[in-house]
Length: 208
Image 1 (tube, rainbow, N blue to C red):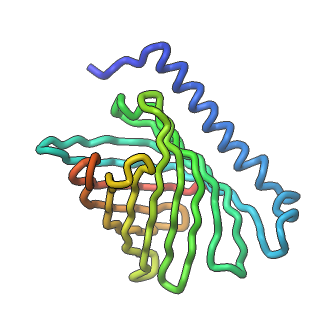
Image 2 (cartoon, rainbow, N blue to C red):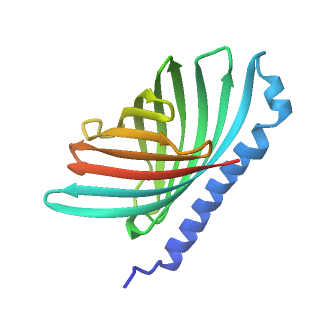
Image 3 (cartoon, rainbow, N blue to C red):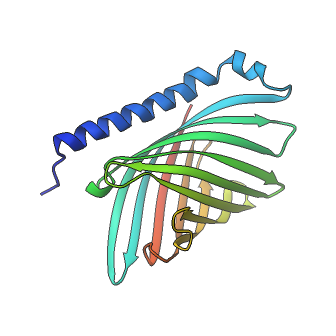
């Protein structure tokens, strides 16, 4: 039997989804207008991106294991310039999970990405909001190298500001199937109060 969602959980979820949708609409239709882009310094522009992602997570901890499936919708507002090797982005991410512990999950944050030849590095700061737990702030980093056209290898780290000693470290393969479809495969250990081993499979579609 699957777990039932109480009226209180449903209302909380609806409110959070509404807030995430409002933020996404703001990113897409409010800020990224031609007038706003033109108001930036010469050479800068604002762009929006939307993604739909299917994610399967596998976790192993103290001899037990679990698999968690998620569907995610992400909206980004990017500020970039062709004359600069870096850009910044604001993002809103909503995840729906098959696991009742992760039914209502929203991430709101910002990132900075720098590109140099075949390398790119990204740093993130975001807050995770869930009806089951208090809001938690995280920082994350990613370093990638392009080994061939449409194929990259890299490492990712994630930790909370509250407990920086609990760290997730992943080795990741990033593949571009087409201009709008990508596949990521990740695996690695956890340190501290996180699962001992984590693996992740992501299939992402960029909505044009």
